[in-house]
Image (tube, rainbow, N blue to C red):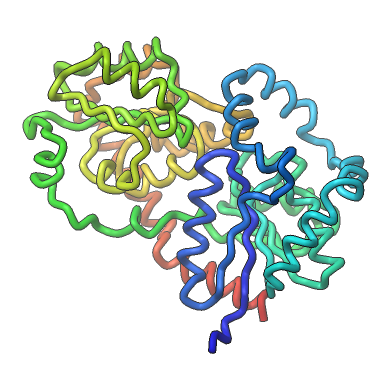
Length: 365
C-alpha cells in the first residue's frame, strides 16, 4: 500500500524554464512523495491555450514589455473578480481530484488563485518563484505564507512585498543531470555527431520555442562555421529547422530539433549562445560553459542578465556584438571560467536538493 503523501504542482506551459523547474522538483520529491503535475486545467478556453498565447506574445516583445511594465507593481486584487467568476470552480475541482497534502505553485499567472483555493480547502501551499530577479506583482498575495526564492539577492525584495511570509532561499532548482557527469566520452560524442575533433563546439539555442531571428542565425553560422563546430538547437521551431536544413550542408554544422540530451551537448561545448531564461542560463553555468546572451524574451528576464553581468559569469549583447568577442583570449577565458567555477562551488546545488526536500518535509507534515 502506498502511504506516501501527495504533492500537487501547478506549472503552466509558458516557456521551457518553468517546465524545467517543475521536472527538477518532481525528481527531487518523487522518492518520498506522490508528485502530480498540473500543466492544463481542462478549461478549453484560456489556460489550455497558454502555450500558444505565450509563443505569440514573445514574437511581439514590445507589446509584451508594455503590458509587463504597466502591471509590474499592481497587486492585481481586481483579478479576484475574475477568479470568482471563472477560475474558482475549475481550480477547486482540479485540486479535489488529487486530494493533495501540499500544493506548489511555479507560475505567477495562477499563483493568486491557487493560494485562495488552498486556504478554502485547508491545504498548505508554497509559492516557488521561478522568475529569480525581476519579480512581477502577480507572484504576490498579501496572505501568502510560504515563499521560496532562489537567491539571497531576491529575498529582501520579497520580504518587502510579503512581510508576513516565511521566505526561504532554496536555490534555483537544477535538473540533476546538469550537476552530474555524463556517461558519454568526448570522442564518443564527437563521433555521434560527426564533428571535427580539432575544433571547439559552440552551441546556440533559444528556449523551448526556438525563436531565433533568421538574420541572427545566418550571421552566427557564416561568422563561425570555418573555425568551430556549430550545434543549432531549433527546439519546437519546425519552420526554422526546415529552413536551416535546406540552406546548409556542412559537416561542422549540426541542426537539431527538440533535444533531451542538452546536458551532454553542454558538457563538450566551449560557448553557449542563448536567451536569458533562468533555467537554461544556470544549467549552462553549472556545466562550466560561458553564456553569450543574445536575446531576452520577456521583461521578467531583465534581472537575469544583470545578475550574470554583475557576477562576470557571461556576456550580453546583440549577435554582432557577441560575435566580435570571439575568439576569447586565454586570460579572458580563464577569468570567466574561474568565476563560473566559484559560483557553482558556492551554490553547491547537489546539496541544495537535500535542503529543498527537508524544507518541503517540514511544511507538508
